[in-house]
Image (cartoon, rainbow, N blue to C red; front, side, top):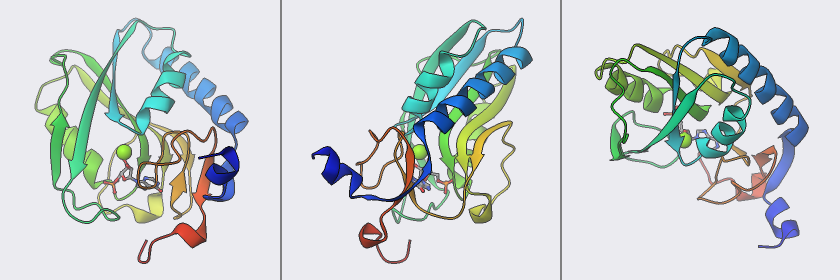
Amino acid sequence: MSSVELERGVGEVLISADELQARIRELGREITEEYAGRELLLVGVLKGAVFFMADLMRHLKVPCEIDFMAISSYGASTDSSGVVRILKDLDINIEGRHVLVVEDIIDSGLTLSYLVRNLESREPASLEICALLTKTARREIEVDVRYIGFEIPNKFVIGYGLDFAERYRNLPYVGVLHPDLMPEGV
Ligand code: IMP
Ligand code: MG
């Protein structure tokens, strides 16, 4: 895919690379302050959160480790069912740890609410969520999100880790998927 081909997938730029980086720097400062004196374990949800997590982590000034989970929701690809299968579990035992789950986007909230329940049963010392993007209008279940990068409208977004059919994760900004590419019913 050439860069022209790549950008053809983008309807409009929603959040520029500079805006993303400025907000992530702020989040890093906030998290650093609130976790002062504690050691943090960042749990990234594969694959979308990898980009955000890598940038966020470089703004944290508390000792931190990272681990990853891969989950897949059963059923239709566009709407989350809330029934989640763990494809890759954590390597680290989180009992007694201060865990911060890092997500790219919260849509219905079903995936994350399952994940939080699962992680809570492992008895971490604390468990909070940091999401780069949230579409509050689409929320089907309440999720207590401690850190939010941006509230976005109910549009399908791509870039900075977010994919459409596994593509566009490499865009440095967050864009809205071009209407021509939008499958029906999304
Ligand atoms: P939820 O269970 O509905 O909150 O699903 C959240 C997951 O759906 C995210 O982790 C993304 O993988 C995916 N997702 C939701 N909205 C978008 C979007 O606009 N672009 C790309 N992926 C999305
Ligand atoms: Mg995801």
